[in-house]
Image (cartoon, rainbow, N blue to C red):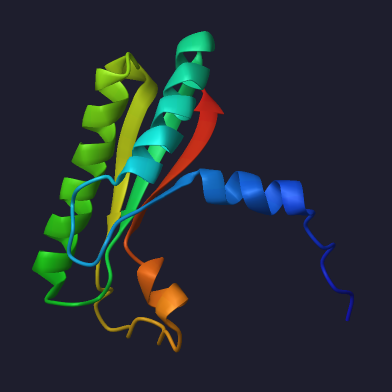
Amino acid sequence: MAQPPARNADAVEADEANHIYFARRSTQVDPAGQERLRLHAARLKEHPKEVVYLAAYAENLGSASYELAIANQRIEAVARLLRSYGVATRQMHPLRRYGVARGRPAPTCATADCREKRGRVVLSFGMR
C-alpha cells in the first residue's frame, strides 16, 4: 500500500498558524492567538475577496450542550477580534461548532499536549 507523501515543515507550520488554541474551559484568546489573528486580519484586509471559515472544537469535558456553547463562544471571540482588527464581517463565515459527538466517544488523549490542543478554532481560507 502506497504511503501518502510527507508534508513538508512549511505546510505543517502553516497548518499550526491557522489554529487558535484555548486554555481548558476558556473562551478568551491568549496573546499568541491574538498575534496570529492580527496576521490573518492583515492578509484578509489585503485580499478583500478572500474569506475565512471558522470551525470551533471543544475539549469533551462536559455535556454536549456545554461543549457546543463553549465552541460557539470561541468562534464569537475569534470573529470579534478579527472585526476589531478591521476584517469585514462579509469575509467571515462561522460555520461549524464541534462538541461531543452523540453516539461516538471522543478519541482519548494520552498526552498533555494532545489535551491542550483540543480546544481550538481552526481558520481555513477560500475565495468568495
